[in-house]
Image 1 (spheres, helix red, strand yellow):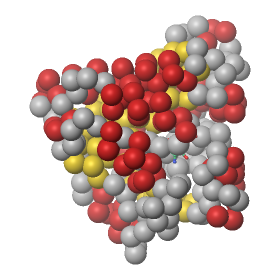
Image 2 (tube, helix red, strand yellow):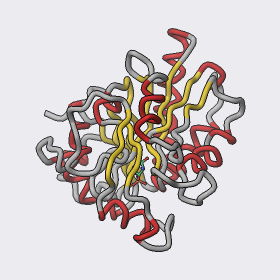
Image 3 (cartoon, helix red, strand yellow):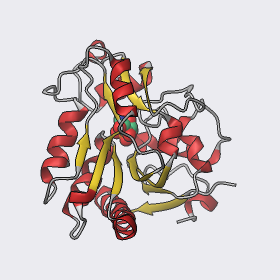
Image 4 (cartoon, helix red, strand yellow):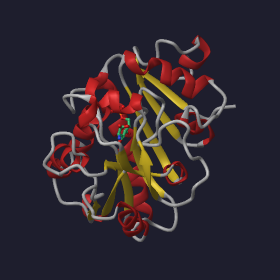
Length: 256
Ligand code: GLP
């Protein structure tokens, strides 16, 4: 039985407001409790409205919030238009009303990406993150954990190979001019480390994600559909627009 909390919104703007609202409440709750919080942020077109809305929410004490970066291409300059560091700096960090306690970026240009994973492993908290903003790829990936995903590794970050469908999605969204320009490897937060989060806010707009959403919600949990493991998480808020939800069975779609 899935614990997913599914909400279906009329459009991307409404989805973004709702996702930001859930994250803001969870961050404020964590800060009220311990005067500190951790937040993981994702990239990709699914996060455009979400991060813009979250940066604009009032009364979040950013100065006590430590931010972690979900994934980054290996070998991509931070000035490249597809760089996730650039995306997060321009679309989120620089828009916050005050600087966060820290923003732990992934350096995809680090000489040794495995050492970069180890560096980040020394920075992540011992316990769970408070909130993570995530998406689901057209191939059902979580962060850059493409199918078949490693559900078992307990390292926080690892170096992964990107599959053809994932790389093609990046071309389709206009981040790269052609497939050969898309890096073949990335540093990604592991599936287990993503799951070790108090509140997962998973935002998925667009018709092109409908098959992946259907498999995530309705298929058995399998590494072939990495996001299907979200069914096991007790507080995963799956935020969909009508098009992304269009293939769900009525009973799942009504779970909103
Ligand atoms: C992208 C990014 C992740 C994101 C996921 C889904 O490629 N690497 O940070 O969470 O994969 O992204 P999108 O929703 O844009 O497909």
